[in-house]
Image 1 (cartoon, rainbow, N blue to C red):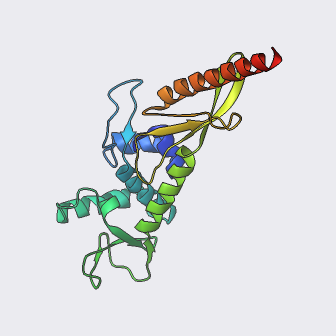
Image 2 (image 1 turned 90 degrees about the horizontal axis):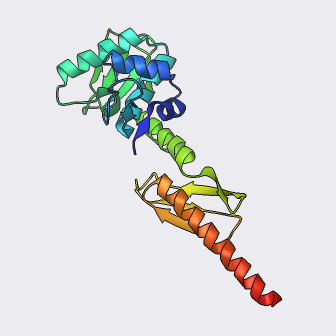
Amino acid sequence: MNFNSKTVSGITGLSIRQIDYWDRTHFIKPSVREATGCGSARIYSFEDLIQLKVAKSLLDNGISLQRIRKSVWYLRKTMPSVERPLSDLKFLTDGETIFVLTKDSKVIIDTLKNGQVVFSVQLGKIIDELKGEIKALDNRRKYEVTVMGRKYAVYLHTDVEEGRDLVEIECPELPGVSSQSQTTEEALEKIRTAIGDYLRLVKKDKSRIVS
């Protein structure tokens, strides 16, 4: 899945201003699509979200942005095979310096200076939290559609875990009325049609009973 700056802000807790600043200063840039001018949107990947969330976790635990930048610069220099240090490595911090765990569990890299008591930024936990936030955000979005002069609440579903492109939409007020499509816009148009067909069918059946 891909995410614009507003959605990224809601998921990670970073302000849009921070996200914009980090992009413009080449700290964490969107990997799907960069802004190309006024009105164009930055598009981030899930891996970008991990980097942003890890950086925010380090900030929240007292590490300055300058120190995070210095750490990332050091890791890119010493580990050229690691394209995204903030999403590919596990970090430890004591609020003063940043450590990185290596493949050898006995070796910890101090990216800034010597330190002693540390705690971990749990990458696995962050990923699970992000998936939960995205699922809550995207798995049941409510819309309203107007058919024959009346508004109906409809709900759009997606499957984040499987990363499906197919979206499903239903109208709980009218059991059995649902639709599927590749995009939200198409799904909304199809559910309007399905609701209209349902209402016309009900009206036709009632007229037969009366006659």
